[in-house]
Length: 228
Image (cartoon, rainbow, N blue to C red):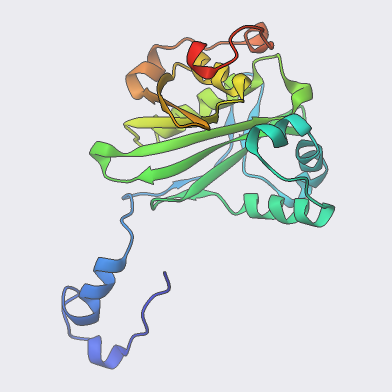
């Protein structure tokens, strides 16, 4: 919401809890005390970092990946739309207020193979909740990269952000993402006709050992996320 116009000469000596000051305080969104800013994170094999406009070639490959688009319900975009989508992703670098989004590109040997993200849902410390998201180029699957990157983002969620709960919302047809959630230690918490919701607490995250390599290989089996 845009800030209200102010007449400074009339507000100079007023309490912030009277007149326009009161209205502004009521309309201002709550925020955490210290914003979480995007920064580089190195894992055993990966570099997590903010997106750059120069990532366009790698981002084009991700956007052209039919499996990624289907899993996220993305449309097939034109080259111009892909560029704008990347530029939009470069702007998501801070978590402070509900609705804020932080996105870190996942780089492997100089190329972006996907990303991980955090959506801040609530800010009160005793009920602070974030939603994690992930995407990965299909050609990079089967090596544990997505698990490694998502675990690093969970470290940020429970460490720097101070979340008490992290959720993951997965399309019920997206079994690879559901399996990834379970490998990370998430618990199935409910579902709608289209989506399944998973949750994890800080203690559950710390108790899960890192999982690598063949654990991400596609598996045959149940046809629904509830039966995983």
